[in-house]
Amino acid sequence: MSTNSFSALLKQRQFLRFWFARLVGITANQMLMLAVAWHVYEMTSSAWDLGLVGLFQFIPALLMTLPAGHTADRLHRGRIFAVCMLAQAAVAVLLVLATQGDFASRELIFALSVVLGVARAFQMPAQQAITPMLVPSHLLQPAVALSSSGVQAAVIGGPALGGLLYVAGANTVYTTCAVLLITAFVLTWWVVLPHRPTHTAATWRTVLAGVGFVCERPVLLGAMALDLFAVLLGGATALLPIYARDILHVGPQGLGLLRAAPAVGALLMSLVLARWPMQRRVGHRLLMAVGVYGLATVVFGVSESFWLSLAALAVTGAADNISVVTRLTLMQMETPDDMRGRVAAVNGIFIGASNQLGEFESGATAAWMGPVGSVVFGGVGTVVVAVLWLRLFPQLAQRDRMT
Image 1 (tube, helix red, strand yellow):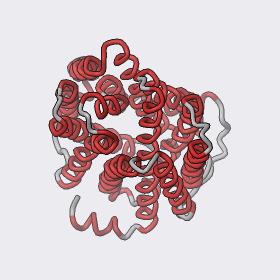
Image 2 (spheres, rainbow, N blue to C red):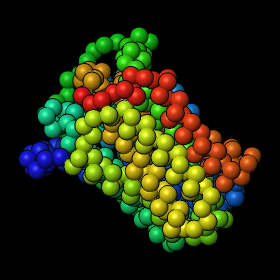
Image 3 (cartoon, one colour):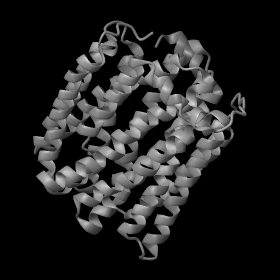
Image 4 (tube, rainbow, N blue to C red):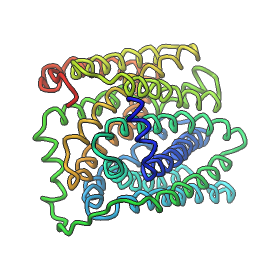
């Protein structure tokens, strides 16, 4: 990112307001996810239940994301994002009441996970489609890089802060989350967007238009599918409470650091890519990064050293960020504004499948072959996927430049 571009970006007040709202909201969301996971594991000591938390978020997100994308192309995207923040704040408040009233249970947390899945289904396409509306086209790439840096900073700070606050009890975390999410709601509600409502009827054809758009572009389809399978197989997030308590013996504070480590690597990589963006051999470097992600996952799986585990997770975050920045930049540059919500919804399905379904896969395989076997199996599978993509998506593998 050149100095002139960065200075010009800092003058975009509406962009910066929304950037800060996302930073606050994602920080709270990460704290909430950590607290819920640790709370469930404290109650049940079950890897299967950890996986179910991810599954109950994924199913409603999968069912609602495409309609949510069409909604983001019809209604005010800022209002949609703000309401999603308010819904998550309501979940945090209910968890406070449940914990104080001693009626918190695994069933209640599973039900609230469904609510979080629906909220995130509408949040994802709306927030991804907002950034191009707030900056001129020549600032889009640095805006995407800065947005990615903010997200990663939130993913670093959220789990770390959540782990520290959990020492004082789950309610301390839930209360803090509610305050932060309400703050994000207020900030976003006052973001001024050049809203241009469309009156296109919600038919199966219009709702599924984003799917057709992506399928007709092998580079976009390959990049999204690559991220899906890499994180689906290689993600170990759901098993971090097991590693923190039973393998590395570092407690909730250590869990916060483990959750934050991938984001540290991702943040550093996003800054590197902003300063020195990939110019040539974009496709091959993307596939190499996914291979590195898989290998680092294997190292984490077999490590019994806390510091080596942190380093391996940081490498996974750095490698994954190459995929994120590449995919989002391609998606925003090649999609017209009136389709961005629906295309972002398709991307949201891939992300949701890789994260939430990946958590279920990790919990299920851990229940079968143990946490170490599950993580190692997933890491090896990710490397295999990177090799297969050379043949399955040659257009992506041979992509030379970002644009």
